[in-house]
Amino acid sequence: MSLKKFDTKALDLILQKMIDTVGTSKDEIFRIGEQCRKDYETLTDELKEVKLNVAKIISTGDDLEVKTRFARKRLSEVSMHFKDYTEVEVREAYEKAHQLQMDLSMNRQTEKQLRDKRDDIERRLVTVHDTIERAEHLISQITVVMNYLTSDLKQMGEVLEDARLKQEFGLKIIEAQEEERKRLSREIHDGPAQMMANVMMRSDLIERVYKERGGEEAILEIKSLKKMVRSALYEVRRIIYDLRPMALDDLGLVPTLKKYLQTIEEYHQNVQINFQNIGEELRLPPQYEVALFRLIQESVQNALKHAQCSDISVKLEIRSDRVAAVIRDNGKGFNIKEKKGDSFGIMGMRERVELVEGQLSIDSKQGKGTVVIIQIPLSL
Image: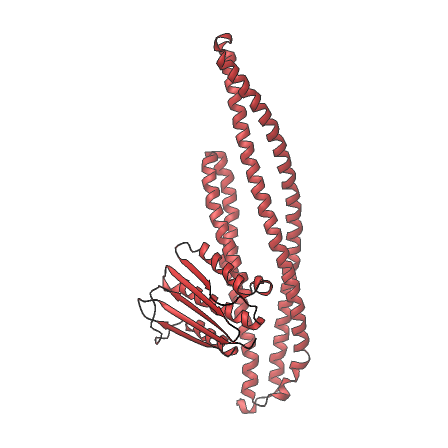
């Protein structure tokens, strides 16, 4: 059918599909929130149990410490008056002191493990609580969108005269939404979900290693497990930053960039990232802060993924009339005239800059690194 003869009812079908999709998303977020609430209750109960165990192990440790102190004193007396005691008494004094010292050492090690577990659960509780709050916030926002879609937006067919624009409008929104959901699903499945599954397997392995090979081998496995958990935590933080960094609303652009770049540098130890704010530390309108953060984030991620660099510098200058950001790396560079499969990232950056009436320039040469310059006018 010719697009010129496009029936406006088709747009209503597209809008209905959007409404159904948004409604499904709302239900999914609600289920995520409910699951987080159950996880929060489970973690709370687990935390109570761990705290009780910590208190018990501390009490046991204090008792062992007193006994160990008396045993060492007894051993010292036996050693000083060796001739006054039989060989059996000397051996018993030594063995008792040694056994108590070993028990005390194991007790302290168990106490440390329980304390670490307690701290980890407390951190997870904070994260789950934040997720619950964000889910509730998203549900309220989606409710507003649903109201908009079911009222004002349904009249759009009377406003749009060009059938092609109406068709592309609905399809692009649905496609963008579905692609974003697929991307998030893929990143969570390939990243944190896989890592957490490995963590569970490794935790079971540590128990077997401890029983079969002893404490030293188990400690090596624990160190390896910590690296894995650290990587999973980084992936979760990265996904959260991709959605929207919470500190951006509370602290502003400059502190959020500092924290973000520090976190990125910690997990890319072979790359040094330098941040310098040479302007005023002013709060900007939300749309400008989000745009600048995303543009700098995309530039840094491109350098980490593709440039094979060892040094990245980010300079930011905020004035009353403009904002300028320069992102420079010492990587392999590329031919900016050559179109690549990942050029959609640069295209997205240009579109984001245009939304705030700014300018984006990229200068890169093979073997000489890349420089990204972002300039956005302000009227504060």
